[in-house]
Length: 223
Image (cartoon, rainbow, N blue to C red; front, side, top):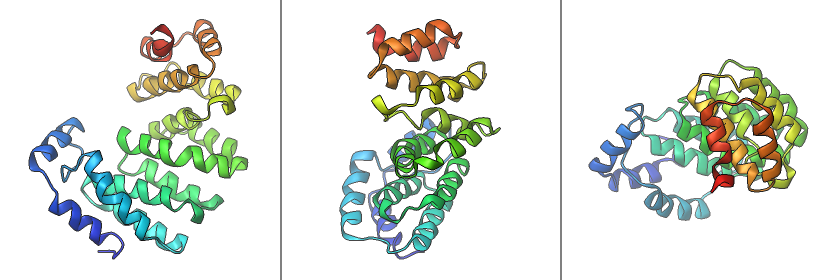
């Protein structure tokens, strides 16, 4: 096992909870194994470790992230998401290859949304010249998790949201039958409604979205 990974793996083993693991596995539709480490305890284990330990170059970082992505316990993928964010000083334009690898491998909403929340907003802020090139490819792909990422990557941008891009990406998939795409559309609009509710109200009124997308989009405004 990679020496950077081993201490956390051992800590997770030590703190494993079979009852939690069973519940977490069921919640994820039995797609993954779990140690049963809930987020607060996982943060208690991981955050101090990452403050004291770092990886020195991107090649090693790439190896660590991919090794974690191969491991059966889902907490190891969550650990990978934390590691990559904590090493953003090592990121370059080409880091998108590793990001995309993690989106399309072992894909489910938890890992993809973690990547969207912790990696994508930062990456496309640091390398803004990549934004349209990459996200337009994702939006046109046949992979629903890349599609979802293209719709959601701006969710933390607030007043810096490119509404033309957001509109384009949503409208291409507004008739999708995929639950995770319909949900993503609503979520992206709901987040932007915190900044510009009038724009979201107008967008929903002028574009026939799925009931799920519309409900999610207007949830914060309605309440």
